[in-house]
Length: 145
Image (cartoon, rainbow, N blue to C red):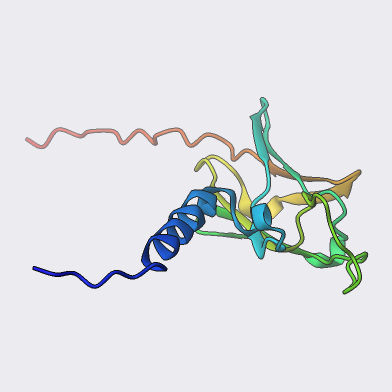
C-alpha cells in the first residue's frame, strides 16, 4: 500500500504536542493574559468565630463581591491591567488580571447573617460569628396506666 507523504504532517503533530504541553500553565505561559484566576484562601477557627482570609492584592473594594448562600461563601472580583498598551513587549508577565472567584463551604456552626468583611493591605478578611450550640430539649416521658 502506498501512502502519500505530507511534509507538514509531522510539524502539525509537533505543534499540537507543544500546545498540550503548555496547557497546565494557562495562557500566560505563551504571553497572553489569564482570563480567570483564583485566589489563595486561609480559614481559621477561633473559640467564638470563623475567619476567612483571602489574598486579593491590588483589588479595590468596589471590585469585590462577597456573598453567602446555603452555607457556601463566594468571593468574586476583577482586576484591570492599568499598564497594558499595544506597544508593550513583555519579556515575562506573571501579574494576573481579569475576573476571579472562589467558593468555599462553611461549617454549619457559623451565623451567616452576622458576617463582617474588611479589606486591608490586599487581604480580604471575612468574620463569621459562631452560633450558640443547640442543646437537645429533654422531653419527659409519662407513664399511662
